[in-house]
Each structure stands twice: as C-alpha cells, then as structure tokens.
Length: 349
Ligand code: KG4
Ligand code: ZN
Image (cartoon, rainbow, N blue to C red; front, side, top):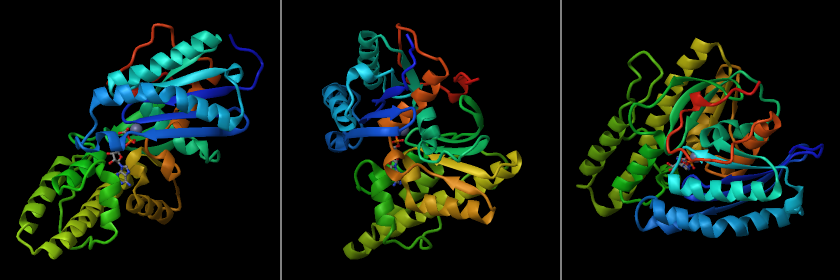
C-alpha cells in the first residue's frame, strides 16, 4: 500500500459537537484545517444532544473535506492516509467520521488509522513546538478528562492522577449552567471572570490536603451552588457582580488545585517540562498560572494555540501521521469506542 511519496494525512474529528478536518504534510506540517462547531445547534438544550450531533456531522464531513483540499490545493489522489477519531466520545458521532474515513481510504487504497481523541489532544502542542522532547508531564483537561500523565514517548503513557468525579470542563459547564449562563460554560465563565474579584468568595480546594495526585471537583461545584443561592438575596445590579465574582473565585480555586497537584507530580517524577492540552487549556487564567509555575521552577510549559485547545481536526491528522509513519493502520472492521483508556494505546517503537 505504501509508496515513496511524502505523507499527506487527512485528519477527521467527530467525537462530540465539532466537525474538524485537517491536512498534515510530512515536511510542510499542517497545511489546512477547517472546523464546524455545533454549539448553536445544541445551545437551546443546554448540552450536546447525541443524535443531533451525529446527523450534523454527516452534513459537514464532505463540504469540510472539500474545503481543506481546495485550501491546500491538493487532490484526493495525493492523500497517503486518513486518520479519524475512533474514541472516546459519542458512539454515533464517532461512527460518522469513522465510516467516512474508512470508505475514503478503501476507495483510494490507502491506510486508515483510528486515533485516540485524548492522544490527539496530548500531542497537539507538538504541532507547533518541535523542540518539545520526551519525557514530559502532561495535564489533560477537557469536558470528560482531568488527568496528570507522564509521557515517556508516543503511546507510552503513565497515568499518575485522575478525577474521582466530575472532569474539570464539566465543572466549568455546571458552574455556568447553575447560574443560567449558557453552554458550553468554560468560555462564558472565563470571560465573566475577567470582570470579577477572585478573592471575594472562599471556595474549597478539594483533595489538596491529602497526599496523591487525584482530583475531585464535585464538592467545588456544590460550593458554587451554595454561594450562588446565598447571593440571590442581593439587589439585581449586585447580583451581576456576584456572578462575575463567583466565576473569578471558581477559576482561582481550580488554578490553585492544579498548581498544588502539578508541583507534587513534577517533584515526584523529576520532570521540568509541562504540556497542557484539552478544551480547558484555552483558559487564560490557567495558562498564565501554569506558565508562571513552570517559570518559577526554571522549566517550560507548552500549550496548543487556543484554536487547537478545543476539539479540532489538526490534532487528529498529526497523531494519525505519527502512527501511520510507524506503520500502523486499523483493520477494515473498524469500531468506535465510547470509553478507551489511554493506557491501552500501543507504544510506537
Ligand atoms: O476538548 P474539548 O473541546 O472536548 C472534550 O474532549 O471534552 O473540551 C470541551 C470543554 C468544555 O467543558 C468547555 O467548557 C471547556 O472545554 N472549555 C473551557 C474553555 N474553553 C472550553 N474551559 C475553561 N475555559 C475556557 N476558555
Ligand atoms: Zn476533546
């Protein structure tokens, strides 16, 4: 199947509410990417409706593929592989991308590879920071994950800490929802927090008084709820300020927890390079707090550029390229996985 051409990989992301397409070239890097967000489609429901998500991906996959091919000025005959998100995520949504990717690869006689969505996030800073070397510490923070991982090489992941309940993105989303701010909560909470006083409300920093690297965010969410209920007694204009102050205090609590856990992890593993990825890594306060943490330790923090923090096709094209280059491809009888621990990934030799 493989010839001597330079690799050109089409990446397809469809695990949740974003359809992302991208082209990654072996020597030129990322040459095109396009994204359609379904936020407006799901907004009235206050969260993602899986069936609507799948249907919308089906409408978007072909036009977005055409868009990236045209933008890059390449034809389907120039593709050497197709990478698609195979999990974790919403099964129906995953299957739309997987079916499209596999059919295209089969028709062209090129390999297709099912990519782990979180591996895509994890490796995304490498897209633009080739100086980043293994091993490093990674903090994966998204709508479904809050994990501290020691990354020894591609596919060689050691899970050091995980959330026992809500993921950090979920905590942002629930905080926004309980104050009636809309969905997805992360960008809304962080925007409002800019006008807030982070010192006003003393929210808990869960699990920081215990040894270990695991997280818990459900208690913080409950504390936000109680604080919000108490604030309801205030006058209307004061209530708006209270919302902003709660958002800022919540963000500060989250940052403090992350810093405490990461300091421990970096110390334990004797590492001084940190990669932060996943949707929540777009958060400005988290970015500056963790950059400051690493600077104070004479280390480095790497983040994807903001548009590649949330779900996108570029990270899937890049992760797929790494695996196709190593000779991997998925068999024709593909499947999608709602759950898929990163520790089950194959190591790239
Ligand atoms: O990685 P992602 O796009 O999808 C998953 O794989 O889950 O992450 C989505 C999550 C949502 O919970 C969203 O509220 C959060 O990332 N998020 C943010 C920000 N932008 C997105 N959280 C905090 N601050 C942000 N600026
Ligand atoms: Zn994601």
